[in-house]
Each structure stands twice: as C-alpha cells, then as structure tokens.
Length: 448
Image (cartoon, rainbow, N blue to C red; front, side):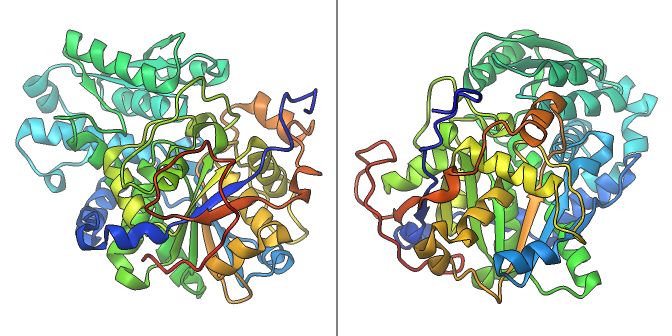
C-alpha cells in the first residue's frame, strides 16, 4: 500500500475481450441515431453557439514510435467552449432539442440566436433544468441554461471537488453537494425535478425519460465528426483503434455508435476503459448474460467523471453489442496518462489532460509496454495501428491535477511492472469479483 496516495499498487489492470457479441448479433443494438443526418444536425446547431470551433486534434508521432504503433491522435476537449471539458456538446444539444420540441419545431429550424429571443421566453416561460454531476456535466448544464436565459439546479455527490462546485455556481446555478454517491444523486435530482416541475438533463435514461439522454449522446457525436474531418484534412490514415473512457457510457456509446454507423462491419476496434472502482461495463461483460450489472459503494476514484456505477441503458446496448473490449483501470493508469501527456516527448505537443481524460493514454502505454501481450495481440495493436483517443477534460480540478503531475500522487513506477489479467467474454454466469478470472486471451473481431 502506498502511504502517500492510499493506493494499492498491486491492483491489476483487468480486461475482457468482447467475443460475446455473437450471442446478440441477431438483435444488435441499433446505431441509426448516430448516422450522418443526425450527427450533422447536432453539428449545425453547435456551430451557431458563440465560441464554437473544432477542438484541436493532436498528433503524437514520437510517442507512437516509442510505443510501436503507426500513429496516435488525441482530440483535446480542454478547448471546448472555454469550459475545459467536452460535456457542453451533449447538454447544449439536449436542451436545445427539448426547447424545440416544446415549441413544436425541428432543431434545424432553430439556432442559438432564436432560442435566446423573447419569443421563446414568451412561449415557454422560464424553464429550470436539473441534473446530478461529478462536475463537468453539471457545469455544462448550468452554462447552457445561463446562455439560453434559463435556470439550473445541480446536485453533486459526496467527495466532489470544491473547485468544480465553484465553477458550476459561477454559471448561476443553484448547487448542492449531497452525502451520497453519484448514482444516488441522480435519483435525488430526478425526484426533486418531478416534485418541482423541473426538467432533468441527465445522460442516463429512465423509463419514460429516454429522449434527453439520447439527445445528449447525439450531441457528443460532434466530437468524432470533427476528429474524422481533421484526420482526413491532415492526410492521416483512418483509425484502426479507438480508445474511449466510460462512466455511465453515454460518450463511449456515442463514439461507438458513430463509427459503427459510418463504417459498418469495418469500423475500428473500440476499447472501453473504466475506473476500477466503478467498472460497471467490465463487470457486465464478465457476467456474459447480456444484462447490465451495477457497481455500488462510494466509487472512490480520482477519475471523478467516470465514478458511475450504473450504465446508461441506451449506451449499454450499443457497447455490449459492438465494442471490442472492456478494461478496468486502477487510478495509477490515469495518473500515468496525465504525466505522459503533460510531459511529452520532444517534438510532441503538450496536452493538459485531467484524471478522466488521460486514462486511455495510460492504458495504451500499459498495453504496448509489454504488460499485456495477449491482449495486445488479440486487439491486433502494432506497427500498422492508428489510435484515436479523446482527452475529454483538462485540469478541471487543478489541485488534483498538480498532485498527480507535479507531486507524483498515484505512482505508476512499479505498478506497471507486472502483467494485467484478462479473458474472453463468454456466456458463463458471472460468479466472482473481477480478480478470480482465468488469464486467457483470444482474438477479438473488428466490431463483431
């Protein structure tokens, strides 16, 4: 046990190859909601919002050479709308879609300028949007409500960063930190919204409340859409692998849906990384029964944006049926990614990536560093591979960022010294808590 960080450096990276898609192939989750028309509708709306512009897509050729792959490209969402995270793409589009539906219009008929006009306020009055958040999503909802001249009420789980609380409050929202975990905060926000006539803007669906979560996911589609345009403009090859991180899975599901809709059976392999303390997709894949399996407890991880123990049902089906692998990552994997991107090899760009944003970079280093040879071979990661990743946030908690990058909290030296554990997903019932799995690696298909 590392006394400075309170982290068990013996905790393993655990993975599971998603061979089980064959059990659901005849009824695979539909990804038409992430087709070209839907993605372009979100992109068009975002382009009308002040401050919109494609975020940078960085190439890291020297890191790629060191890790033994053809190319590494990272989409840097710390530049998104001045909010230091990608979440405004989902919140703004979902709220705009909600307002347009209340007005009886299509989103294509409305722009930001229309939505802030007096005619909209006269027709709808003031609307209050409610949400639960670990930070970035709540700030995005509060920001969107403010710029659209509406109201926001935000609930945060225990242990939330004061800096993130202050950032949300600065957008004019009423903010409360609760003494429960994230998933319980979601339920409290929904109950309060029902009691007070507020509109819940949450990227996980409930019975009878499926539209807004799907609109949030469609809003996230702007991100991979920009990335593909940037890759093509630079002459870079199309990605063979996409690494995404998952909390409730909405962003990961949106990215998987985008690539599956665009490329069909030839889409890149999608690898889903989660915080080990909240790895609900890894646990669900391990069960092999096609159903979501939740993680309970405090969900204590530095990856605050991924500290979600219950999958979004819409995202769950997409990732269950189409993703190539799920990985449970201890905190040191994220910290390693933060340090790698914040202290780049000479000639590579500096990327300020926060705890939830950097875990995929840390995971790629783990896989290509010789710690998971069977996993690397199954994913066909090598000299011909082009990897696309999304740094979903910057230093949204500067104190935690400096603690990891400057002071070495959650050290990865030594922790990367051993091999992780993994197996192929099967239909066998789940009967262990991650660590009892047999180490057995097998090939994974491309978006099986």
